[in-house]
Image 1: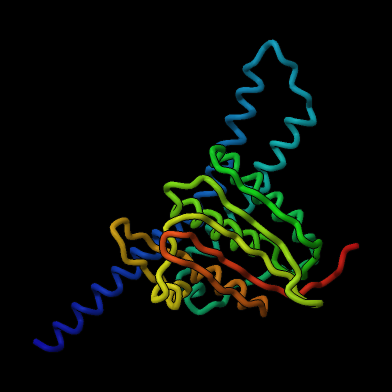
Image 2 (image 1 turned 180 degrees about the horizontal axis):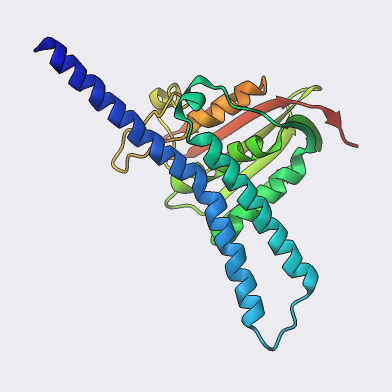
Length: 243
């Protein structure tokens, strides 16, 4: 009886773990899918307007964005569905030097396509290039912004700030004005599939974001107060200083 009971407990734990993982994957994939849909709808509206001549450069720009989102979506699907790899933190990184400020602008613009009612304020306190996996850092940003939107039912504002932590590192802060996170939950938010207690209980996909930043030898933290919103901050080494 003890053996059977223990086995049933393990089965239930595994089912719960897989269920949480599916919710987390769905959350991560939502932004590229909605962005693609938004760009396609925009193109269709432009082409349906017979009175307005659509500049080819505008069409090309939207198609380039769609193509990039499809590539990003394909990569997310292929790598995220390998549960064992994600849990072990064995994510492959495609390292390159890129402009972090430009990435912030690109992510902000893509999310606004699917979330046009939100005011996403972007503040550049510095300019910096980093040596990292561009798509993965973008994934972290999307994760933080989407969590801010999801847990801010009475606010439509998100603030993003890039600033120098010291001479060799740069930080990005995503701030929302939502429900906030309790001190107890803050200590566990980046654990595997941790669920925040509450009436509208949802899975925070902080584990993947934490894994990505750790793989880049960076740091990640959260500042939050119940009822006053949250700040998610990650810090990475600067690869190249821009004037």
